[in-house]
Image 1 (cartoon, rainbow, N blue to C red):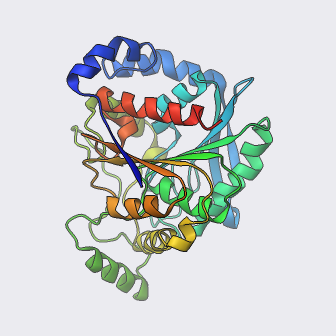
Image 2: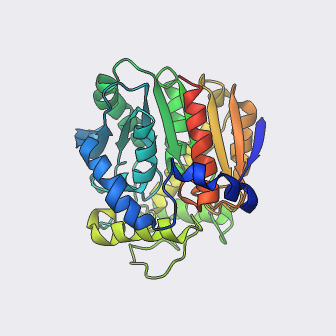
Length: 342
């Protein structure tokens, strides 16, 4: 496993701040810049629609096609997320002359919901996420790819979906970025073995579609508190998006979702499956990640043919949505990796 530590100290960030601000959107006046600069630019390039996924489920997608792309980036988002969460990142990708494609997973955003209410995240079989993703690439991405390379960007649960995809279908992508991939779930205060027993008991008792204990429907957040980022400005921008759009109101998971995710993470980390991946991978680990556990990521990196681990000092789960000194380092490394992969 190759590993780098990556962060900008206060002094180094100060030295390069002006250079970074020519390229990236600072957290200073973030909302104003996103609304006046980024959103109009994205809207001008946006095309959207629906496809039918596994079991004919209706799935929403967006694509941003540039005239002469140097490559194509496909985004696989995380648990409870949606396309607009990636506005800033998509903006940078387009500005660097990449066409960008993003699918909202089943049970998320404007895609068809599957839970016991409009908020719950549920899935009958984790492989449905993978097959949905394949249909999206086959039906939407490849026809608009201009025969250019496909590059993958996957975060958290999307990292789990994408890892399974890369193991199962290893000829689609030319390189992959895995941001805090969900290779093992952090169950928090509840021991993992207890969470496993409870979720399986719930399924046996016919309660698999109920919320896992500790998981709840959507509740509007009023104050800044996030296990995922320490950047208040980026967080508040996102929070306003969520408040204004009922489609973005996601709650916790069902017991069945947890069981299916557990099965997926157990399989994807097997050495025989990891060895099937043929593409170079850049894997980001966050120092203060409380959503996923790094041990499984390290095992994955050890057994992968070509995987570089980047340790994001000072970062919570979402390095791409962090304070400038963290996020800018993340963006630099991602864009450099893609540039060297085409």
